[in-house]
Length: 177
Figure 1 (cartoon, rainbow, N blue to C red):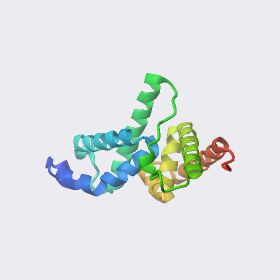
Figure 2: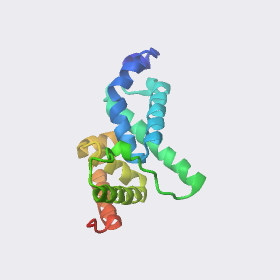
Figure 3: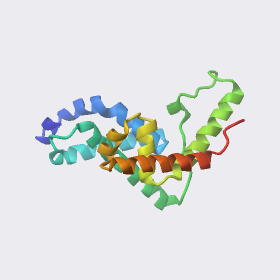
Figure 4: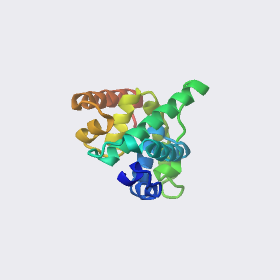
């Protein structure tokens, strides 16, 4: 990151190699669409290059990049809402490992139904709650790490996660087939 901040554009390859997969997982969990997640990861690294000089050398790189990625996801969702109103976010079965033949047909259908319900429920979360939920449950970050990444107080992270879980429980309802 220091090399990139000094203008060495070749340092970007090493930065991408180290953080690309993790950022993709975060964005896929947030955006719920593989193509959008790929685009947002690319845009995250573009922004990192543009703002490398602003990076605080005493700060960790991963939370800084994650914050840029979350901001990219939020911007994408806002643009999507402005263009087309509130729409369910598409889900990509390949990204979640569902493949024909690995599950019984009724299990596959039920799994897709759950994924669709979860996608709709996540779409209904306020941006801050969605970011906290995704980082906690998709990336398994600790509450302290989430607070650092999102630049929030630990208490705010805890209450946002609690509210997100309450919202998801209400929206998901009963999951029994």
